[in-house]
Image 1 (tube, rainbow, N blue to C red):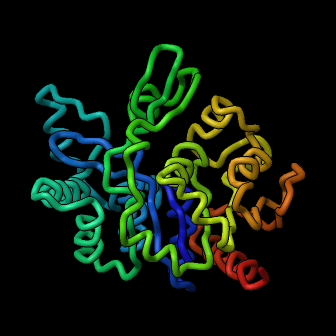
Image 2 (image 1 turned 180 degrees about the horizontal axis):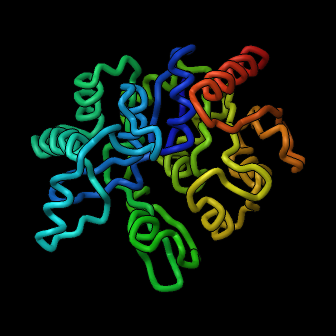
Length: 296
């Protein structure tokens, strides 16, 4: 099974899926950026840390029980990093960045990191090229991290686009695995900024048209589980609901899993409790997903 993932929502699901299934993951990298000389890959790291069993599962980013001595020292020196980076987390960024500076690809660097953390699942970035999610706001254009972290997601969103997407390529290893893969799961991550960048690379979505594709909605009613998905969906003309999620994925989607309490009517949907409050919820939802795949 291939899983398409962003941060937070899908890693929560992966915490249960890893206990009962075999899969590989392609992760959004359009929210990546360089900070303090190091390449930061927020979604990629959340997936890797989850699969390694070291994710801070209170915040769903960073490493549990991490310290922030370097970040605080930099702040005391007058250098305020846009993201709060833990010390052990920073060590991963340094390792990745040194590999990239040595001329290797992000795919190759990711393999080194997953191997070092004893992750038994294959994890791939969506591309090796730099792609940036740009949010067009009422005060100007900015990187996703600036919009979300610096401004707290409070600005009005007029548009969202992915700078550099036209030059991005699906990694060779991913293409080879895609040809042999029959089942694809789109996790409950932000449809616009987490999943859409993956789908847009070399028309990745076309590769999914002959697969069995299940998606888990990240929305109940008109409220996303987390993050600024509602603003982004409205900016791109999608209804903020599971029906809007279906419209985004409808060209290749076989089943959309929506919450049992969601009143919206959606084509090709099945219902269950999709809320993930703990690992047992993640395992329960994972078993339901596997059951649906078996029925397709």
